[in-house]
Image (cartoon, rainbow, N blue to C red; front, side, top):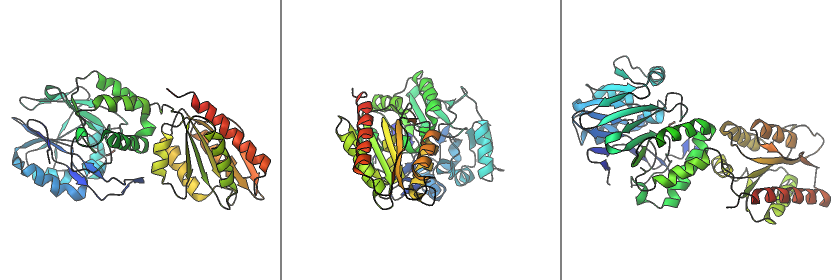
Length: 396
Ligand code: FEO
């Protein structure tokens, strides 16, 4: 495996082939926790790995340099998938100073016993010389946590971008030109949608900051390192930060006795009369991770739920809770669903959740008492047609 990013800079992280859940994100492709070793007149480790894999990190470092020669351990982000290995690493790197910003120090102190650690607190714009190289630090709050920062090596035009530009993608290869581009961009999209979609504005500000740097390589803390397709991932991020709509319509539903499903099918029929991508998801058979990834760039979405006990079907409630946290922007849509003896809950509650997400509501909820009539199904079709027509305007 080629681990060399630049002469004297190597990947020393851990490939997590088997992880399938990342705090609710279904990681079918596994992940990696990327850490990097810079060997210069002074040596630095950039980020760590999840706690259970700390020994693997230490072994990879030891294979290249004596642990006593590590001068700096940089922590760009305190989330435990990157900081969990720090206690073990700091214990064996007896001469190392932990480099991070003040917010990160505070977060690390609340996670671990840091009483024996030596610290160097840096702020935005600060730098440290390693000899031939410099480590420059940029605060990037909310990408992904308040303490997050990037580390930049100007001499190598190399940006350690922490979670930004990452992918939950396990592969034996470390670089973006060693895997198919469509695969890694799709993984980057899923990662963006499920981890950082809520933080579009700060990410946009971070992109502007990064655009001022000369960058030849981006080394994120998950997935492959970008050395050949920086333009493509930057362009993709510019679209994702604003959830830029594409000509795609989603029909998403939860059904009890198939009345809501029949309504969903009729809406889909209307959408399919238009020249757009149509996506159809039953929450019983599609994981929220995949739904969030598709919602990121849809133009419109119809969301339906049968009424259950004056509320929603529980799986739909879960999906809307998940999407509500991620807050996709630039979408319009409407709610639908069946009910029996109570109009409370069901479609009304779906609409409330859509309003909370700031989805532009285009019409009143479509409701069916028990089984939908042909007239009601035609109303569903017409609503689908209107969504499809709206989405057509986003064709290139
Ligand atoms: Fe990969 Fe926000 O941690």
